Image 1 (cartoon, rainbow, N blue to C red):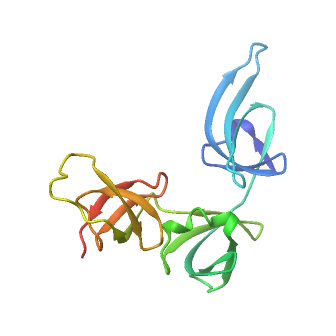
Image 2: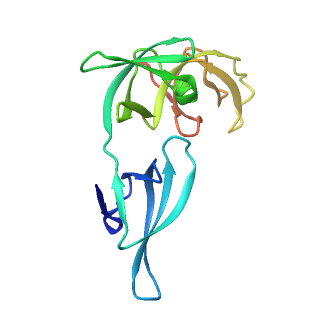
Length: 189
């Protein structure tokens, strides 16, 4: 069932050319012959690429109905990562090609939101930042007190990041899941 293109909203998921797209930017346009249009920047939910498409005001867009489930990451198994729905305990296998880039940010037993479309997983939503423990890094030197001196570190999930010189093994650090950059050291509770 389609809705008028003029009712499209940012963040809405639509089916366009038999592919799922999320609308990330909208702009109303006035055409020279008196009609209106909506120019939408769309992101492909499977591939991650972007397109810009102009919908006429008379066009209809098909909205997709998505199911979001709170899932717990259990363990890796071959080319898959196993997640469990926290409500009904059903387990899902998500392929490495699908979630492999995200897994260095997810600890065992960590909760994430998995989005499904027609029973098939289409995305995993991570929080904007995660807190992980440093398992391996070089010791900092007292003389290196210049600002912005960074050293490599390995975190508990195997993620490699650059951290400030004063941060040591065993410390908890907050890492951006969007950029993979160090944000801050976190006090242990």
